[in-house]
Image 1 (cartoon, rainbow, N blue to C red):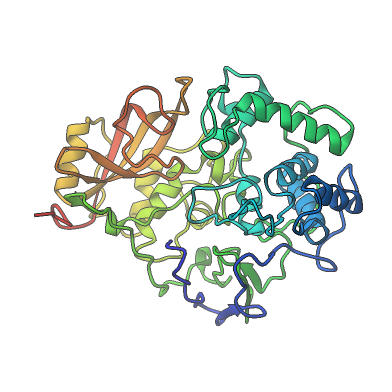
Image 2: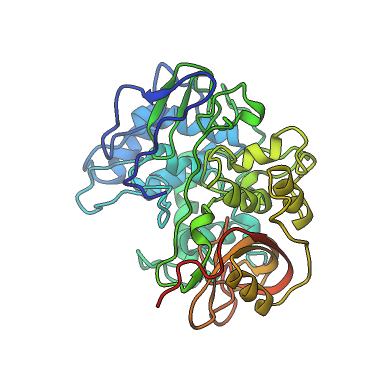
Length: 440
């Protein structure tokens, strides 16, 4: 979604929604505050943490530790994340959402950048995305906390690579994280970031909001005249979807000579309101294992914007009804598309080559891919599902990836996060005319 476009209020059985208290100003803190947030504390109390946040930046600007401490702690516990770790990152990255620092023009509350769906100076969306990250296992060749620090800082697994924004390495960040955690707790880093979930008022990803409220993707708290789910869909329709809901158009790829990208809505499994939802199979979340239903969602949402990954997974009769942390198959994707009216448009799951993918795109088809994708520079791979949508005049294939940011995963040298090492299976889906967006 382009951040300057404000989506219309959801419509459906139940009525309409509107910004509660009007549109929020840029940089206005949007955490849950007292008295509407459960008072759950971490090792360091709210008052001591707020005092530390002020001293952290020599009393410059104003942190939002007083306002948001309880929300940060409770959301962490709801997500099963050590709240002391969350507070350490919040302090380290932004001085606890100190938007007035003279040396920092764009404050990333929890260090999340590079995503239009997670803007700077937005506590709610920043922490929501942050709590979906599980970086300890991401770099199996590194010790757990060095993996956490390195992958969080650079997105890769080289502990000696400097960050693009601030010239520090993963090893240096690891040392700073150790020191900050000890300052907050008097203890060394624990074995893992995970703790047993035990927060208060945990209600899916609505974080304890009333039944008639939800938080819009741009961070605005919305109030509705009927019960809604976390995406603003009025509860009562099958799967929480209004059958007459308008679609969300896909994003064309400028300069790509042959493309069906305008028929595929980029849909991320992480950093969204559905990301923290547990899977019906009992392990994993949509963020950790939802690349399959997220790819299906990207094809369905241009038709009906309510067909989000969580809706596709949990609707009655879903082929994903037993899905767990091990992920899903292209067979599941095919069955889901058939269930949503694509019986005459979806092909068969089959082995394939990049030439096959290119030819399908030229025929006006998107191609759902199952591939072994690199997780980073260490060379490790993981089974991953994504959607191929375009090919340029040089033969470069473009994709919409539900997890990685790399849109040309067949190119580049070496092991890069999101690059495809091996193409395993393909599922072509007829979406448009041959060679849409042809550049003369």
